[in-house]
Image (cartoon, rainbow, N blue to C red; front, top):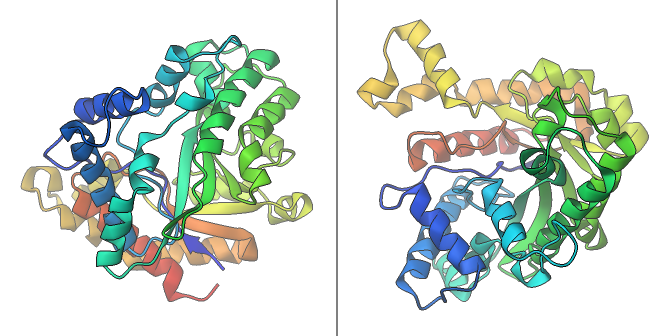
Length: 346
């Protein structure tokens, strides 16, 4: 059975900026403000409302809404609350504020108001390799990478929610640079060790551990790790086909299929070529879906299934939707993706 999901990032509503929501999130993580604070309430409402939009799009395993920079949101806390070990965060501060407000009684009540008993949750956390490359350099030292992985592992551990109304179903580590950065020099054993440390808590709790790569250049290394699901996350599906089904079977792995385009700028360019109209200027964002139709999305899933079959475990947009013009347009893409998954029996 294939489950629909999304990668995480989502457009902000007009009432708050990225800088403001990032500032509030950090204050929550640093324990500088409480739930009684007006800023906290504003943050909570924005996150919960966006999550509800993903749920209403029939996404089986929605990711918590990501509005912040995926390096700074984790590294800033690692830097401020470092233990005696370099790059290892204090357990008490390995916090994702968005998960705090999604596991609250307030969100439970909102779900109940819409007749929803509970949801499954996907949590995306920046991986140790991307954190290392962004803060140290291209030559990866195995011991330092392991320290970054310990910090990621603490975020993973604290991200596991087991409540009736919210349960963590998937932990995904975001490692786009692992397959895309040509300057990276790393030993495969060090990468495998780092990833295994990072996802340790997920594995202990029988939660699917996923990796978001953007490229399959390191897929052969991932196959040897404890990671369960590989998401190469490329918009050209042909790139994924070089990862063979027999490899997945040999290592008992699955894939996440990117079936709808997340790059809205590419979709707009496709539309302009056909109709010579720019939806950015007219603000008729629904025109996007005259190109990225539900039929097209379903066709990609069918094509993927012909190659990978039952080895596809999750499917959704190829990447995050933070660059989309409105929450409504992003929600529509999620709904089309979910419809493609649910319409056919796989």
